[in-house]
Image 1 (spheres, rainbow, N blue to C red):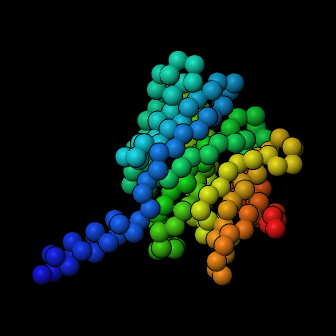
Image 2: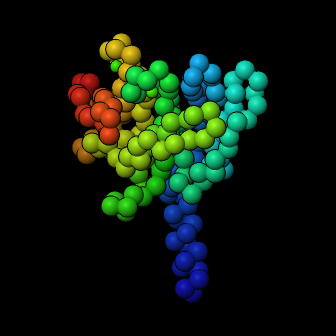
Image 3: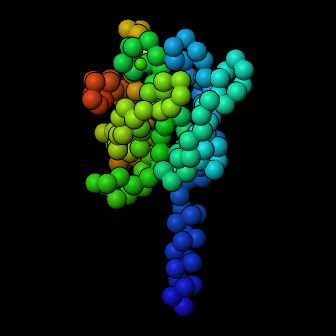
Length: 168
Ligand SMILES: [Ca+2]
Ligand SMILES: [Ca+2]
């Protein structure tokens, strides 16, 4: 009976968790273009855009990756890679979309910002230079408590993202 109950709970959790998406984006580092792809099994593959040759593969299935975005958030001339994970956080034991950022050096990924959340839960974001200053802003589609969404804009501040404004 207990085993059946456990099975039911696990099945409910699987059904309720969002299905992992397949995502692809372009990353430019050191003048070289790479293609980032996330498979349904949670593998993050980095390939050279010119040759199609795979440079690196990372198994991120444990963190449940949802989608990737790229942009130069710090103005260094190279794109950063952001991966959105659907997971719990150390201080927030509820599964949510959580944006994390990496730098790619041509061989491996280096953690840049392991963010746990933005101002509100969000469904999507992108890295867009909305004011043409050479630095990409994080533009997020956040869920309002009363229903509906609002678009919020954040700027990288060296150690995290600073909220700038909402687009109303
Ligand atoms: Ca950069
Ligand atoms: Ca900008």
